[in-house]
Amino acid sequence: MKKEHSDQHKTDSLIRQVLKDDLPPALEEKMKERILRFRKEIEQPRQIRRRNLSVGWIFRKEVLAGASVLMLVSGGALQLIGYRSALADTVSALNTSVSVMDRIGHTGTMECQIEIPGDNGLALSYTIRWLSPNLVRVDAHKSDKMNKTLWVSESGIIIADHIHNTTEKAEGVWKITDATFRPVLWLMTPEELAERLYGKWKLRLYEQTDKPDQGLFIFLDQEEKAVLEMTVDLNTYLPLRIEKFLPESPELDEKGRSVMQAHFNWNQPVSPQIMIPKTLSKNHDVV
Amino acid sequence: MSPRINQKRVFIILGKALIIALLIVAVILSGRFADFMKGHGLIFVLLGAIATVLMSFTGPEIGAAFKHAAGVPGSDGDIHKSILFWESASRNGWMLGVAGSVIHFVLALSSSQAGIAGTVSHLAISFVPAVYGMILAVICLVPTWKLTLELQDKQREETEDIHDTRADDSSSLFRFEHLIGYILFIAVVSWTIIKPSLSNTYPFFKPWEWVAYWPALLVVLGGTLIIVLFVNHSPSGRTWTLSFALTGLMGSLMGFIQVLLGFAARSIGDISNAVAFVLSSCFVSLLGMLLVGAPLEDRRIKVSGSDHHSSLTRSAWYVFPLLTLIFLALAFVLVITPMKQELGSLP
Image 1 (tube, chains in turn orange, yellow):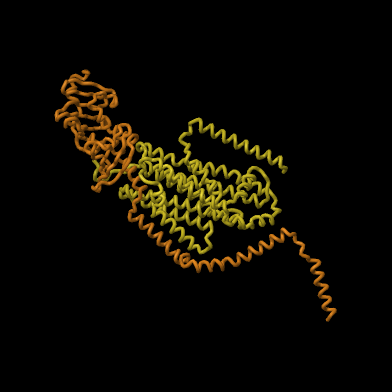
Image 2 (cartoon, rainbow over the protein chains, first blue to last red):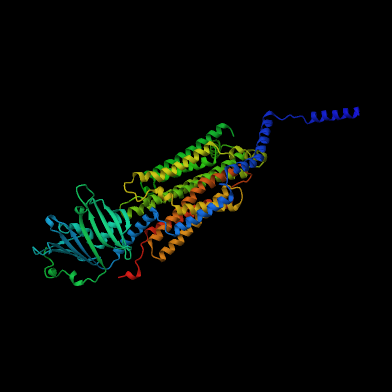
């Protein structure tokens, strides 16, 4: 028995001697670290489970699934019932203004009545008729009397003064020097109006009016420092009315700020005869 | 390689970078590419790229990636991490560029411009950040390819070393750099969205109202959560990435169906609502992929034994932003396409 014990002891010593723990301290440290990490990893799920139970039912899978289905359905429903956002309204405003500009450029005929309040209640009024982009007649009235007429045609621009019985020619719309027509030059041709929408007027607001098929644009004309309100027909995308205002000021009420009102009538038959300057047919060369 | 040779290589690379920078400055100063210069977009992409890499990588890993790209040798495991870094940076650049384009598109719509021409030109310029993102992605892909080829050439003798480095669990933990990355990213996005509207006198809307566009937000977040829960697996970056991409795509397609229906009904209101939905869905999904999916996946790859990102995740990262860019172009066309008048009102 004693011999057996002594043999076992010898074997143990031999094993210890041969397989002695000679790991470098750094590696031993690393190994210990790993064992600790491994232990932690094993224990982690248990800890998480315990924590989950204590946090409560919020993170339970069924509750999360229910909440996400609710989110998905309510998001889809909100979109389908027409949830309006500011971005959608802006896209709508921009697209409507592009459509208006496009329609003005492709329109047939137009007749427009313009009123400009004058001093002492003497209002200036104009009738502008477009038969085609290059065939336009503008009549200027003062105190209900036709004062002057302007024709735009492919052959040029002619202005007739009915009071002094004189005529004048101009080479381009923006070269007209007659002060009578200067306030309405931007309405002289479809291109001029479309150009304002395209490159000059700054869109400030767009909203639907009380009438379902009408929209109201508010633009800022930075050159003339004026505010313009344009009411458009949303079926045809053509302007119905444009009103021009001076910028807001404490001294002026809304009526006092209004400097021009234009009412449009689109695609109505206009007699081509009124486009022929009869008074000039005999003396075209008179300047 | 001796330290002296290393130093020489770093100088050569710095010299090359300087020459490229000088060329870029010359191109900018020539004035011919003025339309392609968008300071805000550039800052968004650059700062966003820094923030997103910080979300996934630690400071020493980033430093090592730059050193390896400059030719400094390293162990296979370290080079592997550097490849992952450059690939992630490339992917982030691309996604950030597209996200920047979406933000600038909305900003162009939110601000009042001189006429339709002004707005349309701003909308067109909003695509420039995507170009910056693409350029950054290509720049970051170069070191990826270089290091990959180098690694392939090397004998894989130090297999143990690779596993030892990859098994360094410290990279999987949430580090201080990651927190900085998240804070920086949120700050960059917020600054990009808020800053222009503060200087605008007549904004149509505050851009942050658009970010909280509830239908898109609910659909994308709800849909993503459902998919993640349905997968019934511990949610990894891959699951989040794919879920965000899929729900974003689903939202966009829903939006486009609504656009078509809007055209059928000749309703600008419906079309614009749908365009808003498409833009918001894409943006929320991109943000989710950048904030949640990509960093989680990068950190997982660093500690797992897998060599690279899965091809499915890669396709989500590269294809979804591309689709977003296409959707953005379609939205641009929709915004500037005039509606035809109703048949009954024809002259």
